[in-house]
Length: 223
View 1 (cartoon, rainbow, N blue to C red):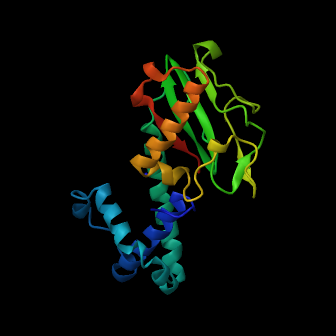
View 2: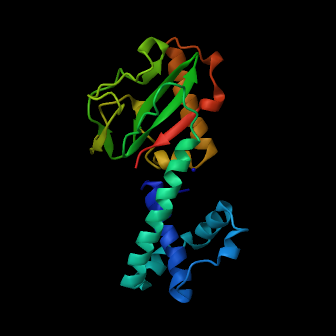
């Protein structure tokens, strides 16, 4: 996939903690396997929404063993979810999937057999190198199907470091102050906004998006 400016995974973690804390401390058990047969991700989301407003009041009541157990349980859940998210992105072969910057992400589109990815940082972070005039990186036939990048090694496209000021990138290279990459990914409207901004910028640089593969539109977030 409104969440606060902290990362969605942290938000998911804490809200899930509240949900599971309420359930597990009472029953000390996981759901029965038969219950899981009819359960869906939507069911989990509904439970998270239910307890999100009272999270702050519930957590102080948690005991050390319960908190430690839930931290482990939720980390296991997140480790399962993250690779599934990556599979939602249609990659242009044989270009490798670029690793998104931690504390930021990549907004990617594919046009005329070339993939363009725009690195972006979350609020409170800035790029390691100056890239105000370097809006995107590209992988395609003219690059030998390898990614252009400022960084040694040719894998990462950008690095987002903690910073009180965001000055190294273009104004649009930062996620809104009231959201993060993961917040943007959580909602269709915010995803569309960022994709449209990037497509407009590409057009201004003479890249015609009329032959864009819409199924390859993707936002990838770092962790």
